[in-house]
Length: 236
Image (cartoon, rainbow, N blue to C red):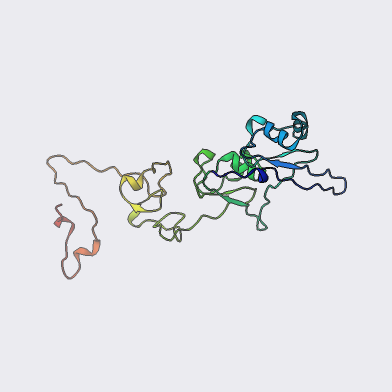
């Protein structure tokens, strides 16, 4: 993971007063190697008591890279995203090195808020530990992002037109049709089969019965003009 340089770690914010509203505080951004409360208050020339008074709820044992803290009196500025004009949520797509508290710190929000806002997001599994690289999630309230469409998929919500498999074949967790356990059962990562799931129970035959296995039989095959075949003609 690439961390910011010392100069970018302590980017100073602007003070402003609007009416009777308190001014925003000057901020420091947590980053390596200045990643502890001690590093911060010594680098900017204040005391531990002052840092604590400027940040009453600050937990120095749980600082996150990218988190902003006040190094002067005032209100901590918020850069938390707002919902889009159409009511959809503001989104963020994960990159290498992301983790739950880091994403929350980037947007001045909490992990609890992210989990709440993404309850209806497609393929959100309810916990950050399941988050995948390249996953688009909500970082504000609002309707979840649309399901991405992949024209190469054969079935499922991500396929063109939310297609289903022919002949009631299983639609796998990855959006492909088939009739084996790889398609009909859950994927190794826990993602479930999408439709027509579970392997059928095949009938058993006694030794006195003739067993036939038919992969696929076209009902009109017995009436076609040439190469017509009836079901009883199969002995495979």
